Length: 411
Image 1 (tube, rainbow, N blue to C red):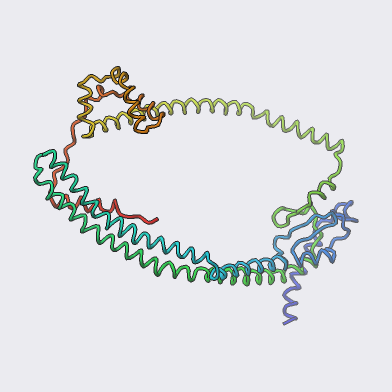
Image 2 (image 1 turned 180 degrees about the horizontal axis):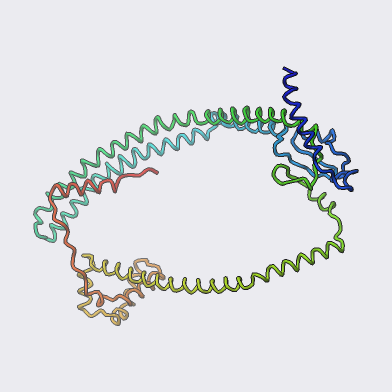
């Protein structure tokens, strides 16, 4: 077994060694001391230990190099400790109060939906409210003696009966589902969720992940430590190898600017200016396009205002056809409440609005709206829309269709 492993690792180590030997020789000024201040090509014993233990290498200047594919043994150990802690936290939830508070809250929401929303609001209160609305409308028709008023109450009984027949089964079904969820589904979920999380974090995070990382480190780190070349800032790609330089050491390591540095910076600055000036025409074009866009946006804004004004006029015209306002507007128009007379009467209107608790901004807005839309301008009211004929079956279907619109919703 040992000889077989040796035969398997030897070609890889030899290939790595030959690759290192094929690397171009360092410059003359680094041949003796190295680019990082360390002499030699191969890693020192300290650096070999750092690579195998942590996957990090420090050079003589304090620069630290992170080798991406070498995890070391320290990082998997920390990962194992972290996920073991997470596993303990997951199972500790069974001994804390938070889990049972959450269970109580979630079950309480289900029970609240089942009993408060479904039974109380939708059935217990919803059925009397539906009957009350139907009978109230029948009473209004009877009081006004509208044509066929004597049939208003039988019609209301028909609507209330259909609403009740649909509403009660829906409410009872919702109550049963909410009760089952609060009593069985939610407790079952909270009984296993911490176990599932803890087992997953222990199996994957605390065992499988660190074991795989350590096994990989055992395979890859020793040969790389054996034949690897000393790292240097010039051999950092920012992906496979990244460098971390302590700020204080980085400042001390910077040499003083020379005359050649200043000349090079000057040439670079003039080149930047030249390249930037080449785009001045496009900047002017961009500025002109911005002005064009602003003008287009302003025109679109004015168009939107006109559209909103049209929509407002349509809503006001529709509101003027409501039975509660239509007759009053006709009477006010006959009494001469045009723009001038409406403006003259606004002082008394303002007093009434303030007595009703309307805030000042809304009062001034009402004044502007009354000025633009006095009753005298609302005389051309559209005709009342005649609804389609109905019968007991059609009305029953209409009632059933609108019952779900008032169905209870969960919190």
